[in-house]
Every structure is written in C-alpha cells, then in structure tokens.
Amino acid sequence: MNEYHLSRTISAMLGKGNQNHNSRKFIANNVDPSRTSQNIEYINMNIHTAYYQLFDEALQRYNAKQKRKDRVIKDYYNKIRTSKQEKTFHEVIIQIGNCKDTNARSPEGELAKIILDEYMKNFQKRNPSLFVFSAHLHMDEETPHLHIDFIPFITNSKRGLDTRVSLKQALAQLGFKGGSRGNTEWNQWIASEKQELSKVMEKYNVHWLQLGTHEKHLSVLNYEKKKREEEVESLTDSISYLSLQKDHLDSCIKSSEKQYAEIESKLYEIKDNEQELYRMTNEINKEELWEIPQPTKLMSAKTYLNKIIEPYINKLRKIIDVVITKYNRLYREVKQLNEEIGPLRGTINYLQRENGFLTHENMKLQNQLNKLKKVIGRKEVERILEEPIRKKKTHDRER
Image (cartoon, rainbow, N blue to C red; front, side, top):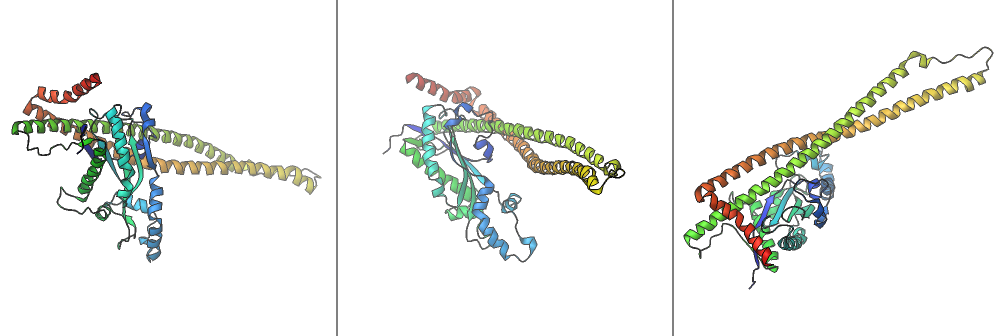
C-alpha cells in the first residue's frame, strides 16, 4: 500500500480560453512576471491554423457536393463561431490543491508541477477526439494549474462535414454518454480526468482529498463539523478563484481598451492623411495645372517636345504617383484597422458581461459564507480559514 505524505483536492473547471493570457502575451495583475520562466508551454497553435489542419479537406469535400451556392461554407471557423449549438473550442483548467496548501512558491507547489506535467503529457493520447491546440502550465500565479484548450471533433459524420465539430459526439467516442442532468457527458469526462490525475498523484504519495465524501468512521458531530469546514474551504477557494478571474478580466478589458484607443488614434491620423489627400486632389483639379504650356515663336516641334511637353508630363506623373501611393496606403490601413477594431468591440463587450457575471457570483458566494458564519459562528469560520496558514507556519518552523 502507498504511504501517503500529502492529501490534496483536485479542481477541474471550465476556462474562458484566452490564448494571449495563457501564453503571457500580456501579463494580468495576478501574475508574477519574475516566475513566468517557470511556466511550461506544451503547444501554442493559432486556432485558425488548427481549424485548417482539422477541417480543410473535409470542407473541400463538402463544398464540392453542393449544388446550391447558399449551402457552400466559405469559412468553417466563422460558421462555428456564429453557431448556437457548438463553441469553436473549450478550455479546462486543472489544479491540485489551493493557494494555501499548494502555493506555487512552496515545495508542494513544485511537486504539483511535476504531477501536472506528467498528467498533461498523456492527455492528447488519452483523448484523441479532443484536438489540443493550446496548453500551458502556469507557475507564475498563486497555485500551479494547467490551461488546456481543445477542439472536440468527430470523423465519418453522416451530417454536414464528414469531419466536424461536436462536443457531445467527441465525448461519446471516448465512452462518455449522457445520463441524468447531473451526469452529463462533460461531467463524466471531468470525473474520469480527475481519476487519471489521482493515479499520477498516487505515484508521488499524494492522496486525492475528495471533499464531501461520506466517512463512516467519523461520529455524526465530527462528520457535520468536517462538512462545515469543507464548505467554508470550498467557498473560500471559489471566492479566491473568482477574484483572480475578475482581476484577469479587468486586465483583459484594460488591454483591449488600450488597443482600441491606439486603433482609434491611428484612425484619427488616417483622417489627417485623408485631408491631405483631398487637398492634393483639389490641387490636381485646378485648371491651371492642366494648361499645357504653348511653344514660343519659331520653336521646333522637337524642342517643344523635349523642353516643355516631357517635363510637363513628368511633373504630372509624379503628382499622380504620390496621390495613388497615398490612396493605396490609406486604403490598406483603413481596411486593416477596421478588421482589428470590430472584434475588439466584441471582446470588450464580452469581457464586461463576464466581469458582471463574476461580480454577481462572488456576491452569492460571500452571502453563502455569511450564512455559514451565522450557523457555526464567525469566530469558528475565521478559525477554519486561518488553520491552514497556522499549519504551514508550524511546518516551516519545523523544517
């Protein structure tokens, strides 16, 4: 039998899937940049590249069969993005312990990194119908955790593309089929992944602490007390996680708003250039510019051509070249900036909605914590919250 040295919880939750955050293209408030070098990047593929790799051949086969133009799919990624049935991708965040008992700066955090790394290396092999295009292990936040972004897909489909996006059927291919409302394909798969992680934990003498499990050997009083402690700890972890998510979303909003402001500034610059272009156009339209100089008396045709007509044509050519060049540059800049600013508006709106949702969830959890304080007493709740900190200090002194 294994002699367990530690007992830790396992968390597996849905993430927002922000690749810029996961790959640290921008740094959120809850990230310690001095520890970013300790992170592990397994894969960081552009989602459009992933879609091309997965579905392009199937898309060509599908479009070749279509007799009606309105049924041809030009961009499969955009089709899924605007779909109400499927998401373009899903993210799961896997974590061992919490910021108190498995802090990323502690030896327990280092052990969690080793375990999560070993677990991640077999993830794709274990889940062949979940195409992982982005995966990162973060050590620069409070608790080591994995962000795994994947596209669920199926092959040999009889409907739509023969290779297409489908979370339900991708999980069914892995053996997870829907049951009751609380036993969905997703919940079954999450439970299975936790079991896989617990197997790796056991190799390192870490026991999976499952909160809320029935323990017959405890007296009713102790069992109820333990349940309340677990509720407090679980709520505290949830509040802490939501607070981190809110900080992250705040950073995302600030980053997006900054990009938005920069693009607007560029658009104002373009408007100045447009004014210059209009001014030059007006100059070109002036009648005197198009008045061809007349030859002087007794001037030969050859001299007239060389000394008057050719310089005049060269002058016109230079002016027109400048105008065409400026127009082309402005056209490209406006097109590019409009392409950038559209999605950014959507991102800001989405992040603001998510921020509001997280604030609401945080308030609900705080209310639950306040109710627990009324049931078991404020001092008892504070004692439970401080207990892990006291244990850690004692452990550090003993070492």
